[in-house]
Length: 225
Image 1 (cartoon, rainbow, N blue to C red):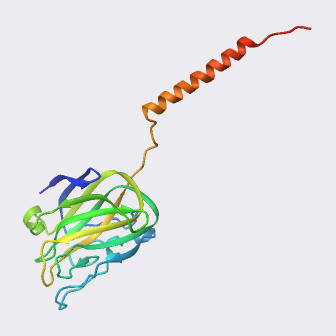
Image 2 (tube, rainbow, N blue to C red; image 1 turned 135 degrees about the horizontal axis):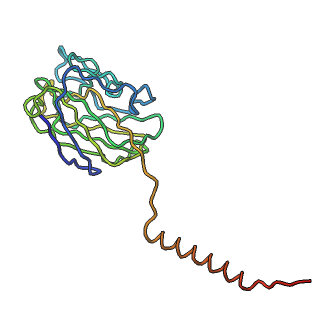
Image 3 (tube, rainbow, N blue to C red; image 1 turned 60 degrees about the horizontal axis):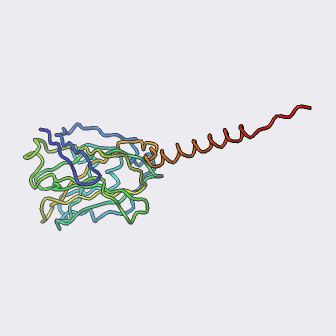
C-alpha cells in the first residue's frame, strides 16, 4: 500500500510505503553520529508503566542501526501523556539536504498520528521542513504493515540544527510513538540567478562602459613628428 501527499512546510512531497522488519537504513548519511551528529535535547523517553518495556535513547534514531524485527535501534517515545514527543540534534557543521527518510514502527500501542521535521541554525528558532498526518490508527491498518517509511522531499535547505516532532495516536500507559531511524537525503543549493531587474542594470552598465570607450577613441588625436 502506497500513500502520497503534499505535506505542510516547504511544499514537501511525502510518500509513505510499507516496510518489512529486514529494513536496512544508511549508517553514513549526513545525520548519523558517524558524521559527528549529537543529541542536544529530547523529551523523556520512558514508558507509562515501567514494567517490561525497554526504552532506547534518542541518539539511536541517528545511529544508522535500523531494524524493527526486534527492538534494536528503536527510539521509543512513550511517556503516556499523548503530548508531542521530540528531540533536537546538531550536525557537526551545516548540511544541505533535500529530504529525509523516517523509519517508523507500531505494535499494539506505539504509533504516531503526526510527524514533522524542522531545521534551524541556533537550536532555538526552527523552520518547518515538513509535517505529515499519518492518521489515528496503527500503520498495519492504514498502510498494510507494522513498519512504514515516510519519505519527505523538499527544496534544498542548509541547517546545522534539526528537530523531530511526533504526536502519539493516544495517551495512556505504554502509549507513544516509535522512531527507529532518521536518514538525511543530501541536496545541493543552486547558485543564485539574477533577477530581471539586475540583468537590466548589468546590460545598461555594460552599454555605458562601451559608449564611454567609443567616445574616448573618437577624441584621440594622432600627432606625427
